[in-house]
Length: 612
Image (cartoon, rainbow, N blue to C red; front, side, top):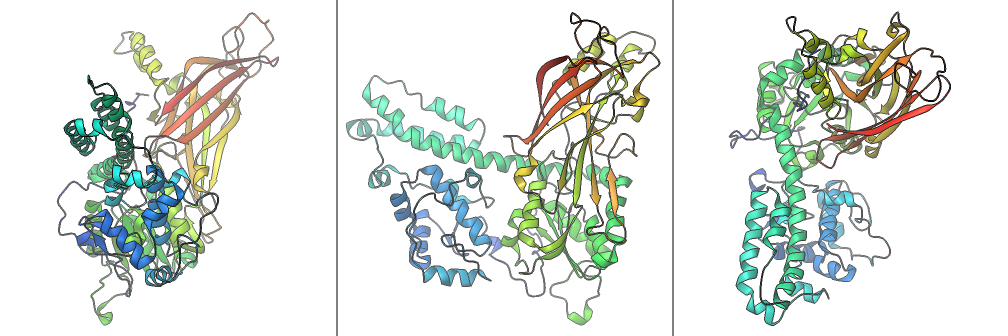
């Protein structure tokens, strides 16, 4: 088996490249009575009110409007609660998340429309806040709205205002004497943030001020720099997430990726069968397709008899492509078409947005969608972290009891032998021994996960179930998990000698369309080494050194190391943690490995950390 480079291309059929010119994008289409929640043309032309669709040229005018029209005095609230800069960021994102659900940010009451919510706010007083504030969770540091210019322009902590809130500032002679110096560095900050590269390191370096002014340099370092560093860090975090998302969406601009996924018969036919062969689920259903790519799942849903299909994608390019595909096949919904001209099959609308922001683009029906379908799976199931978007759509846009397809996912693991590495290739290259290269390649694989096909004959242990996800009920934080399991040699993995080497652990997944929703024909999509290969392949984690295993091994004394020829392990006990990484859309995997001998003695190896 040839080892692929550890740098992994993305693997889902959805989302493309926003970098091309699509200034004249088609308007998003919705249900017959859907209205846009805002003027798309103004999306980048001002600061959006926290509560309504009005936009403003400045932060002060926006918050003045909020105070007069929505009875929300931002500056007063900041002063009364003593909020710092991060607290303000959390508050803004918290309010936007509640308004998106047509809920009052202070009392939690839900309304049927934004206009009703705004009437409620105008007639209400902000209650006295006591105890823990509801926006205190760090989850609200993440921008709720893409390109929220209010977060980038927030200047509530300018020195004049800081004094008003009782916050310490460094002023006086030093401030006056070094005004031009402070201004110079302030301008440098803007250029650093705009550039977006190594923003914190470069900015902190820029504020290492060498001065003979003594206290003046100290006050400059401890005054404006602290405030501006906070702004820089928050801006860098927001821009970092946006940058990763842009790269992620842009990575799907290659039609070769879509060709590979559409050509994956195991994948595509599993979705086709689940949608076309379950009429009790699909006839007349309203369907939300998250991450539609070329729109293949939406086409299946329309063909299956869905009454309405909303296909969502984060890429302008793929939205254009999916719209053209739906139109060419007679499935595109025409909002301006006369009812007598419409055919029953013209049910698909394609919306350019991230799933989390769908309700900013269209008026989501109050009853919710009947079916949510998405091909969200990545390498090792969770790479690319699209599952969080699917769960968000489930919680906000799927009707109670609605179907999510697929509705179950399970991660499996097993030990693999020498054939699962590149060693056999390097041992005989046109008759020459290049095993020294193979050893180095295998050593590198112990630091990076490898995505490749592992043949079933190279699996040497029994299969273990690591974790199962009930996609209809799981919470987003359950994406992070730790699993403990034991691996024993399988009957097929025992050679004539009775001893073999386990070189590492390989992971794969199954996703299932179960009888819970697919009553006529449940479907299972398997990516196992024992099944037909898919474009997901398997994900390989190589040990630092192979562990010798035997079905049964006699006790040979304590001097021999467990997992060696002298004392083979009969069990490999492993503990694997998979968590979302600090880098957006990545995952971290840690593997703890312990070999157990026939008499119960144990040997543990150092923990291995992988990033995918």
